[in-house]
Length: 223
Ligand SMILES: *Cc1c(COP(=O)(O)O)cnc(C)c1O
Image 1 (cartoon, helix red, strand yellow):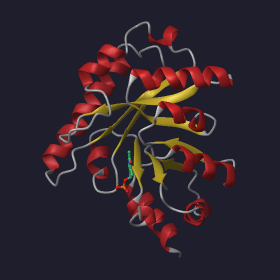
Image 2 (cartoon, helix red, strand yellow):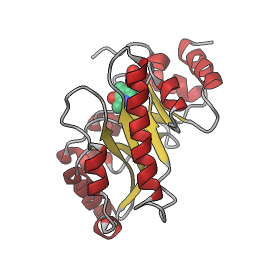
Image 3 (cartoon, helix red, strand yellow):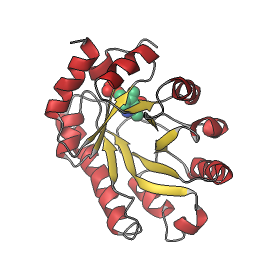
């Protein structure tokens, strides 16, 4: 069996059936994606707008493209036509731009709000407090072209399993508070995207129902 297909099969045996696997294909060529596609994979994650647009235009139409990287507002128009889910809404400014572009295209775009719970300093993502404040009751009228589908988070990039577990638990608590609060009448709000190659089993144990795996499927990336 080719390497990618056998790695995928091995992963699928370990991942619970109710957890969606996003195969993170960023920086990997179309041939690698097609190998995974041939093994039945349909959901792929990309982190650069133009790379995703290019791949989406050349590869089979039944692929579900997920955008997982930091999205600049000037690239929103390249992503909206192709993305079935944007994982990385990291500011209200970006949310507004996606809403405007989706409205222009006459469609609704599914998004996850990106939480920042990790140790590392980054300017991307909301703290749980910021997110709770940003998603007030007026949110649905204010962003009519947005379908709020859940939350995405990354854990600290450390070896300390307890720290990783704590980060994921914090993200889950925030997700559940929103789901049972402002989103209680929105059945679309049900996705908790967390876990990558090195930490996905901890993420799943802490409640993730979508994981994003690149290296363990496609091998190391060459940037
Ligand atoms: C690249 C990336 C991944 C995949 O990481 P791997 O360690 O290769 O599995 C997952 N999530 C995000 C947001 C990424 O940018």
